[in-house]
Length: 151
Image 1 (cartoon, helix red, strand yellow):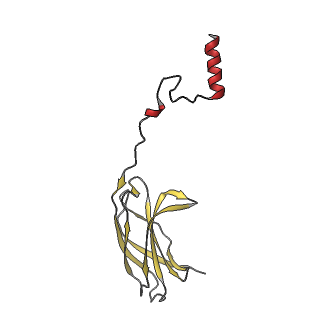
Image 2 (image 1 turned 120 degrees about the horizontal axis):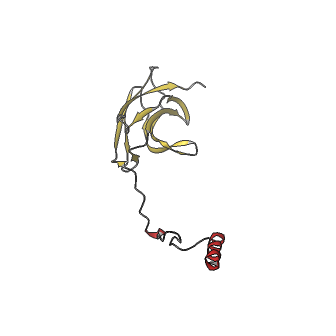
Image 3 (image 1 turned 30 degrees about the vertical axis):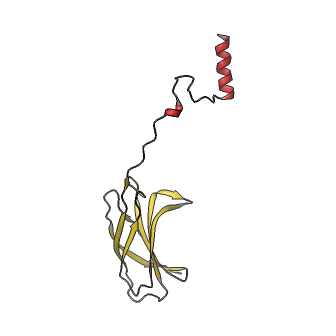
């Protein structure tokens, strides 16, 4: 009995490095793999970008459109899935297509599309509303409305 007590204390103090559980005999090397989340095939989000303000855009303007996974945050920001840029659009509205790759959209996550108008590194317009897409019954076609950024 003393031998069992000593062995138990030794295991608790030193930690067991064996892949076999001393209590149930389970081999931890044969644990079943975790299940992978269901992913969607790649595709394209389509839509139109508009603004309540009409007029021509600056000749150096570019529109940046992004798809984010709102369920995964890195550094306080949602994970970027895809991005495309429209160079020198003459005016709004502007149609867009945003392709996203295979196996990047997880069925039970939430996704949103955003857009902004950038001139020489400064944002002048951006979406200020979440536009859900792709999962949980959300569409793959959206109309994004840009708001002027007040500086």
